[in-house]
Image 1: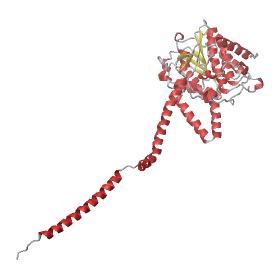
Image 2: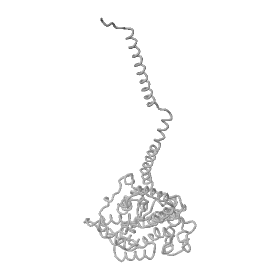
Image 3: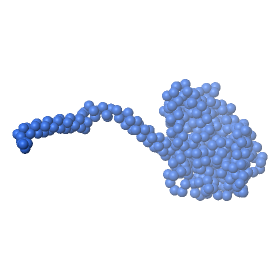
Image 4: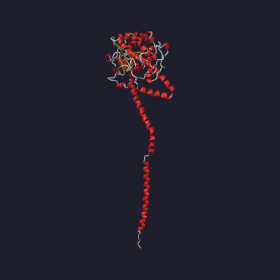
Length: 426
């Protein structure tokens, strides 16, 4: 009755099941491997599609890096070339600071255009260190406001000097004469005359590559405004006060020039354009060159003045203060803004970006005043009489080819004397 197993039949069933399971497992493994292989494979079309999707992000990053580099480097390059804020760190030798000004007690100074900008800071530092200063400016309201601001600034300084306002309109020779007469009536000495005031009506071709003429105007006496205010008015003022400067020696005259001197007319001076016939603009007139001419005149004037007063104890210097955001270009800024508004959104954007980059290269007014403060206060033995200086306190040669022309500087003097007297300039 014992059960007897049948090995043959059982073996057949086991073999069939094993084969079935093995094939099923192989099919699953094949499917799994195929899926993994498919997922892990990188076909050209897939790579191209992925790269295409990433290009906008890559382009954005590259453009952002480029713009950031321009925003950082361009102001630095402009600053180094035109003497902006970087000159506080890159000027050779000891860099002059306001704290280097010695005791100015007993000194008397006149600073034209000192109601604002670098003129204001020049007057402020002179007063802070003991000098008595005349703020010479056209607007009584702005002049008096500057005096009040200076007095408030130096209130805590025990050594501070005094400061007063006297009206001076450099566009009128009559006003210049009255100012000089009023000052002489004070019976005060005069140790420092800083011819700081100036006007700039438009940038001109040397800065923007486009000729402008919208800045053309004439002074009360009929002179083209740049040369009339920036040079002739100051020449006459200096002439009227020269005897006082000699009597007060050692004394000095500082004439404010500009790097724009390089953009004057090729001849250096265009005397025929100084007093336009009938007050009408000559076809050769251009704003930038007219402004450059007035600043080249400051350099030549200081050179000739130094030669004429040699041995009297009166020294003379000219300087470029650096690129600074001041009210000098108040007319220019309004006109360019109006033009940009008319030009649409792209023109406004270009003006905004360009102005922003240029502003980042600029000196602050208090730093822009340092070179003329150095020339106003340093030991004359440490300076070169008649020389031209750029920030901060670097003696250099003018960039204009006529900037050291001794024949032209003498002709400039003679022509300016004739202009003041009302004679013919030709």
